[in-house]
Amino acid sequence: MFGGGGSRISNHLREFNCLHHHPKLGFCSTRIVQLSSFIFTPSSVTIIADNCNNRHFRHRLQQGMVSSSSLQSKSSGEIPIIPDRFSLEEDDHQLPSEGLSPMAGGIVALGKFDALHIGHRELAIQASKVGTPYLLSFVGIAEVLGWEPRAPVVAKCDRSRVLTSWAPYCDNVAPSEFDIDFSSVRHLNPRQFVEKLSKELRVCGVVAGENYRFGYKAAGDASELLRLCEEYGMRAYIINSVMDKNKDPGNTDSNDLKDRGQVSSTRVRHALALGDMKYVSELLGRRHRLMLMLKEQRGFMNTSGRWKASIPKSCLLNLPPKDGFYKNCFLLFGDENPVKCSVFIDSTYIHLETDEVGLSNYNGSQDFQLLGVEFGL
Image (cartoon, rainbow, N blue to C red; front, side, top):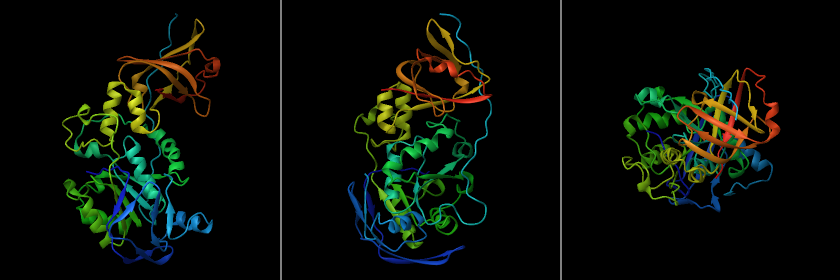
């Protein structure tokens, strides 16, 4: 499996020279000098390096934003029923079948980025300290391994917004996300996987959590990742897990043997199942946003001075919280200002109610519309 999260980096690479062949730029020689016990602290990181195919790092050098020897961290009437959603194909960030990898020269965070929680954000932060940050995600894991399908924590159409919100933490660069079909890497052993990163994807380095496993049947661990990356001329950084300081690990699934109290997507799902939106927000580092795809809906009905609508759960694009009543929520329509509302969730519908007149313009004139519901604390 592939996973990780963290806050502090330990790098065990020795001094080496790497020589990469770039199909467009020719050969690029890079000399990396790193200490045998190299630590990322929340305040700073020191690295001695000549840049290797890293446009973000070159740009910062040219602008005088960073020196080559150090990087600073940032650290009641009838309520209308809205019909079911339709099948919508969305564009994917897929790796090109030929030519230069879009991640060439970058620093890749490795993990299962379902919830995009604060542990995942920390991976991106540490990657941004040494290069252009990327998230490498594997899609189709459930189908390949025969798991039951389940709704994602973050809707696919909302992931770009979340990653953009990480930019202030990542030296004002929003991490990019690229997908690889899990079936294409499932049978790779640890060495073959690292070789793919180096020779095919041409990344300069990787960041992973201390509990990261990779390769066929999760045969490789973090220490092997360090060793193999050094062998293939890449930088590797292993970071300690971001720990959940607010809850007893026993409150989560006791059957999860990997749970040592760290922030995880499993904990986010568990908190949603409890309807504890304050806890969910702490784990995510933001409010949970539910996304709904509406089709041929008639808009909200004004009943006794309040705007109301009921939307089938089949319109949901991601995981809702536990059935129940939620106040201090917000409706979001594209670029419009958030509209304060209350939400009641039952077994079949998401019931929305607000007294703000701004909804009079939301009349369902378009065939398909995205509606966001953000949950307050």
